[in-house]
Image (cartoon, rainbow over all chains, first blue to last red; front, top):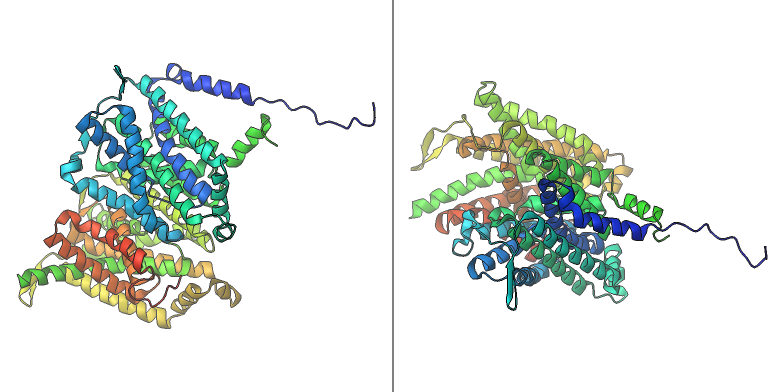
Length: 328
Length: 290
């Protein structure tokens, strides 16, 4: 053995690619493996994953605790519902419109709200949800009030001469899966970009970030809008899936659910949000727990997350990632 | 015309008194804990349910049901205070928000789970109208006004002269120094919290005969109305809270009559957002204390 040869670390086995392949296969095959109800639970989890990704950018990366996600979710649902019922436009047009409308509404709401700090910001964003609900209840000529919009058609596509309608739970699952995967990629791209690092800088120390030349105000406003776009797209999917939109879409309960997904999965982690939505939404749907017990469980989850389990499942996910050969 | 305005004004004052008794607890809790208690309305709901339970299941009188409602809430508040609120001392604001949101979910849905989600009829209270100065007012509303005044006079005296009151003021000024001079901060927080919860419950029991219906989700709306009041009054400001609650009560009552009943519950949040924009320290405090 020559002296130039230094002791080398034992080559670690890298299981990441096989694991990814297995996950992709499982995700694609899920409707055929599980029952119809499992597919339904997965669709709900995928739908809630979208606003949760947006919230994760806000809470996990930029450090702004917002409850407004349910308001944007509702606005997205109403935009898609109104367009589909009134004009019968195709699905992808409505999807894009929901995102754009919620993003545009988030701008005038974000400008005053983001001037507030911690608790005041939380109260203000909570106000958006309540006011959204009040508007959807009382602007009867547009939203039909408490009756809600019913009879939203199945997702309808029109590409040039081709047009087809997507029906059935299995097909909807694939639609939600594609959009969910695209949203996850988008969130990942944002976080990995230099902008993502600036967001983390704002979370860690806003004044320091400002002094280093990060335009913190613009960053916060843009992240607020991006998070609203994610929520709006999620709301659009939700409207299509339930085929009904009512003022109950604007509920504090949804904001709380999204917070539990993000914090439970581990704030500031894209994989955490994916995991969290499957665990908290998918599992509670799949177990068919009564709504009251589910909300009691969510409440307990919040308490546990705040006092005893601060990082959620993030350390567990990280450890697993390292064990299968991830970055060291 | 004038008498309708006056009648709505008086109704507003009564509603304001109800809000004031709830909100003063929340503002005191904020004072010692620097955290908004998003579960505060749930104690209002618990008090009402305790009284409803006492009347419907135990067959007690309304007077006794007030005691049952408040005591039941105090017991629940003691447990929650020991398990959760004490841990919030010195914790970041975000964890306070999340923890109290969690408590709100648990309390509200536990009640719905046990008693069902439907509306319940509250049979009790003094609903006979009496005639004062030319227009009639239910006895219960007069009782609410009187209790509200008593509560505020009592709190004013307590905060100024009693040991707990002085400790509360000290904690709301500087937590670290309180630790240095030997004030048991978690204990003060716990007592303030129980006092606030008990006041919310009292307010709930007093209002129940006026509202007639009792349901599990009623606390949420009260929490939402308390937020603009405590901001308007200036966080931690007992006297300001009283006037702010009256302003909101009267505003709601006038909006309900002249704009439309469906807009009544929006007034609060519109006020909240406007206040946060222009005077985040409230109408009655000269500068922001927190």
